[in-house]
Image 1 (cartoon, rainbow, N blue to C red):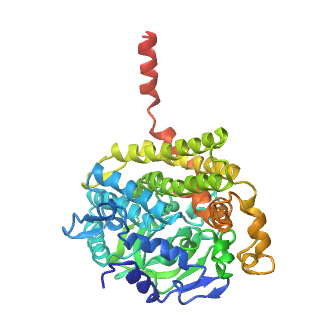
Image 2: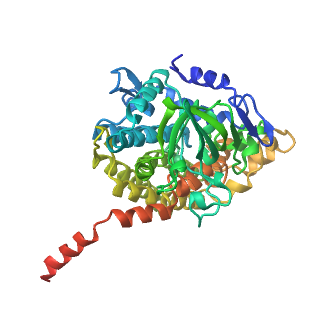
Image 3: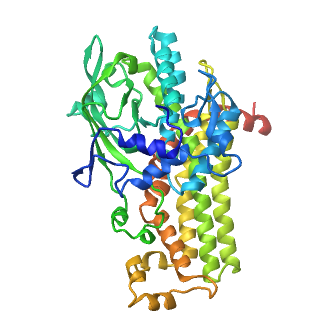
Length: 482
Ligand code: SF4
Ligand code: FE
C-alpha cells in the first residue's frame, strides 16, 4: 500500500520482519525503540508537507515515468531546476529536524544508476535500464524508503577486493543460478538502514578485470533472508533511554547508522542492475558521490541554520548579543554556512543532461562543495561553542531540575538574563551540546567529514577534474609566452 503520511510511514516500519541488533540485543520493533524513534521521526518528515510555503513544490514532483505525483526522494532529476530544488528541499528538512533525515542516499543512488544502467546496456547489451526503471516505478508508486548502500567494510585498505585474505571484505557474488545471484559481504556506516524498506547496493569503488564478482548492484527488501543489521553507537546515545528529553538536546529527531551484513542473500534477476560489468562500476561510484556531495550543500546548511539560531539565542539569553565580537562570530558562521549553500546551488545550476536523459550535477563543483563541508561545520561548531560557553557540557541533568530539593538553586544560579526562563537557556545549551559534542555531532560533524567520501576522495576527484593545461595557456597568453 502506498505510504502517504508520516504515520503511515512509521506504521510500515513496524511491519518489517528483520534481524536487528541494538546494544547487543535483538530488536523486533525498531520504530518504537527509544534509541531509534528520533531517527525514524527525521525520515518521517520527508512524508510531512509541513508548513513552509515552498514545501509542496520541493517535496513532490511529477514522475517522468508515470506522470503521477511522487516524492522527490524517489525522483530522477529531469532538469537543472530539479537539481536546485533537491538542494532546497534538503536545506528545508535540515532546518526542520536539525539532523540527518537519511532518505537522500537512496535518491542519489537512483539517479546514479539511472544513467549508468543505460550506458551499460548500450555498451554490453545488458537488460539493466528497463529493469531498473520497472523497479523505480514500483518504488515511486509505493513511496517507500530505499537505503543506498555503497561503503564496504574494506578490510586491509592496501589490498584490492580480490587480494583480501577474507574475500568477504567487499560485497560480492558467491553463486549464480538461473533465477538470480547469491551475495555475501557487509556494508558499513549505513545511514538510515533501520528506517528503510529496501536496500540498494552499489559497488564501493571502480573494479578491474578479474574483479567481476565485486562489480555488483542490486536492490532487495530489508527483511530478506540472510540480512542482519547492527546499530552503530553515537555519543551520549543512551540519554535517549533515560526518560529525560531535556538531556537529549534534540528530543524529537536524530540520525542513525548501522552495519548491514549480507550472509548469502539471494537476489532475483529482476532486481540485479549490474553483475560483472567492471568498466561500469567506477561510473556508479563517481556519479553517486557527486550527487551526494551536492546533497551536503543543502542538508548540512539547514542544520547549520539551526545551530546559528541556537548560538544567537544563547548570546541573547546571556545578555551578550550586542558585543561586537559576538556579532562578528555570528556573521562568520553565516558566511561559512552560506558558502556551502552557494556550492550546492552552483553545482546544481551547472548540471547537464546525461545520455539517458536525466540530469547530473557538475562534478568538480560538487566536490568543491563537499570539501568545504569537511571543514566549515567544524568552524561553525567552534564559534557556537565559543559563544555558548562551558555550560554546554556542565549543565546538570533534567532529573536535578525535577528534584524539588535542588531545583530552586539551579533556577537561581543558572539564570542568565532576568526576563529569560532558566530552562529556556538550558534547552539551548543542551541543543548546542547535542549538535557539537553529543549524538547530533555524528550527523553534523563526523558525517560532514566522511559521508559521501572522506576529504581525500574529494581532493583526488578535484585534481582529476581540473584542467590545469587550460589554466597554463591562460597565464601564457596574458604573459605573452609563446
Ligand atoms: Fe541526506 Fe544529508 Fe543525511 Fe546524506 S547526510 S542522508 S544528504 S540528510
Ligand atoms: Fe550522508
